[in-house]
Length: 127
Image 1 (spheres, rainbow, N blue to C red):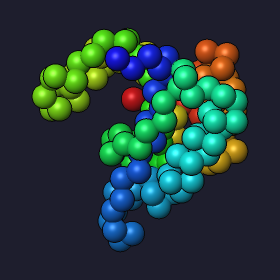
Image 2 (cartoon, rainbow, N blue to C red):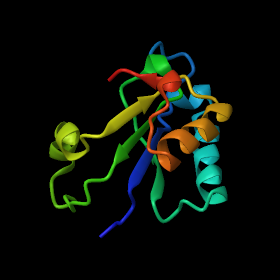
Image 3 (cartoon, rainbow, N blue to C red):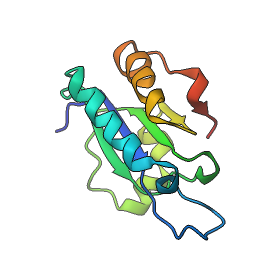
Image 4 (cartoon, one colour):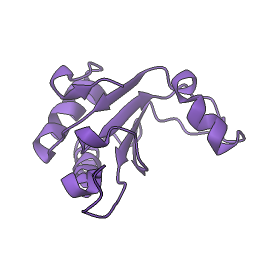
């Protein structure tokens, strides 16, 4: 069973540049993902924080987007994927969405949210 306290999901959805919905990759999502990984490694938080790439987090207008949730430590991997997605608010009640991120925001989010346990309001977006 995974013992991480936090999980960080960085949207890395890729669409054509002509797509009107846009996508987080066009706003530097891969750099944001790497910045989270580097910062967690630098602060030696790897035992408590897991960084993952994700698909669309349905906030395309706010790209680049990251979701941080506090693990509830239940293994629900046996559920079908569609059901897990529909129930994510129940599975991960402590969810925080951050948007319009740049690499400078990442260290502030890690320090505030993942080290001190206080979500960084200036980068938060509503769900």
